[in-house]
Length: 342
Image (cartoon, rainbow, N blue to C red; front, side, top):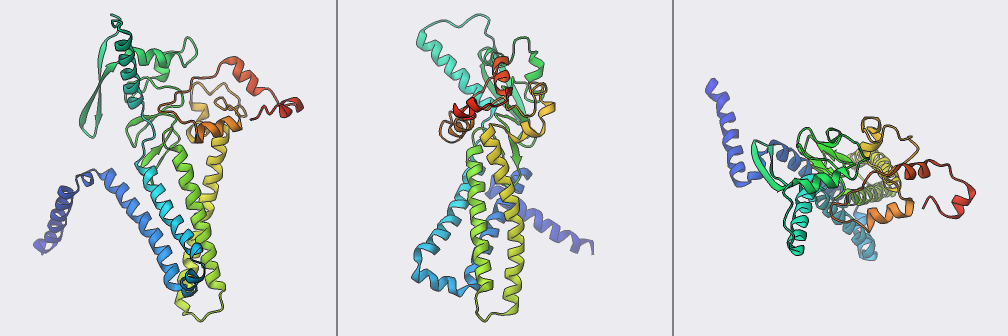
């Protein structure tokens, strides 16, 4: 009896070992979970679209009369899935990568200017234990430390902006993600469905993915409602399945609409989810009133920086006291005429 119970378990273990050998990325439980979510999300899209075309014969007939309509819908499905994988595979912008790029730029500048390095600079090795694998990052950390310290007000203790996990200096708007075990520039949140953090490098792609997913859910819901309203003879179980799919689709659409509006508000005010939710826990935002957005440059400039003017590893220093006083001043009629909010 014991042998019968152990055999299926041994078979599952051998099968899992075989898949791990074929796909080394599946050896990490976090990657297995992320891959499973990605497969589930793709299958969910295929189920909704496949059942729609399987049940609604009128939609297939309409493709012959209006091919552009069906082609546009299928193109949106493909574009949404492509945007999902592009966002999930993109880097949010890690502090270690920015530090390495800064050090390489500093070394290249020194070689170009043919100036010897200062004796105060020390060659330091930063060791990070990630998944029990030591990864050493060598570089001249003095230039990075000085650049980060210049972004904070004078007299700020380095303990306030030094990560207790990575032991590196964090620029403003940076947070250590415990799921990724890295410090992320302009950290927004860690998205479980994407399997990656949302930060400076992929926040724009994340917004466009939400927009495309919302549009796709709305369009699919309209097609389901058109199928139910059509005066055709159908089986009762067809209508029951479509109604169940429509209910779940409506719930997902409400969530996506709220998420899209929320992130649009964050983009217009140049904020992140972490800064909005944990504002009182961030030491350089505690004394700033909640109605004041310290990193906002106006609606137009925020949109331009978010969509068009994204530099690699763009670091934002803390605003000065004069800038905070200017942004906390209430609006007047002259400010509106001068487009101060823009």
